[in-house]
Image (cartoon, rainbow, N blue to C red):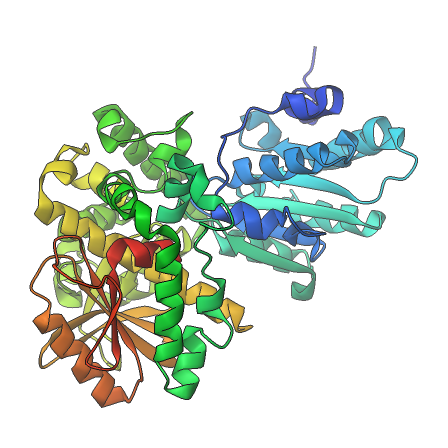
Length: 520
């Protein structure tokens, strides 16, 4: 008896879409929603980001929550009254057989869905087709197989008010396939899904902080008359300072509760706790095997997904570069020449192949010095402190007991959240360019993060431990040299202060580190 390799996906459709029969009761989802849920699903508004264009790509590393977000969207819509038949979910990573003759399997699955499921409805519009892990069926080296791009173009052209959602590990995987299929760039968008932020973890522990009188929304910091862009335009710092103080007042009485969870978030990062059922109150609840699993998942992702990056010849070097970043912890820039000697490759391979590939996979970002046209060194920041813990220590014990290690993790998380903050502020101004955060070395020291806010540099220095005078000096130096009206000093809880949010030297807003993370 011969096997038709184009049938396995169709045969499993009802298993992968149990809501067709069970409705909202079919779902088993985390009790919490990441902040991504709110801007993607828009639960309190009409429409969603899934409907802003015919195709939306959700891209991000494995374990960041792309699948969960898609299912939370389906669950939300069904609970809000949508018919379950309006949603088709196809997971291409759940069975390797789905990846054989995948173009034909995809077409067959959609035909079955149209005739047997969607056909139950008097009016099929709108409806949604979710294609999970499409990078598994891109097949760039198999010219006789269409991959997923061509079938998707066909199924979108077939029916009005049909929306397709695809997930992949990297934006380039979506863009490359859609370009090959001649799908116009104006008809699709991509949205990065990153590991949990501090505010996501905090709201999981304390849902009451999401109540309207408690929720510290960053919107007014991103846009409006009291925002950071308004301050950069006017040169007036007081409106932004007052806005920050008002937001702090919303949660001032629970500051100890929030502050006590910073080290747990730094030790866990944004992936490990999200993968667990229930709430992880403390990193001490995690075992060495949890961190080992995270490390193995990253290794598997590199070997499975990097082969699509044609310029990468030695995939193991990418894991070694992540390990080097974990050991360095962003403490000092690493000279390119040192990387050339360590990896036995030329500088172009490091700068133009290795680092971009890791950035595309949202694992590691290499940053150079601000206002330096010929940088000789690069800072390496992992984008998840849980991965740093996994690679450098193996478990959370050191992060929870060594204040020096905590401060190092705070720097790495500070960079990641600064990238998110930069993106959010620029997006609120209508610019969705890739975020840029660099460092700057002056006569008085180093500015940890230089944020590019609409082409204006905004300096942010981290003083997680006292003293703070050196940080104030280098911030003042930067503000003078580049004629910027405002900078920020982030302080840890061991830095003594009478006023948690204060104005230093007329232009530097000092605020707690944890509060900055909450605003990002």
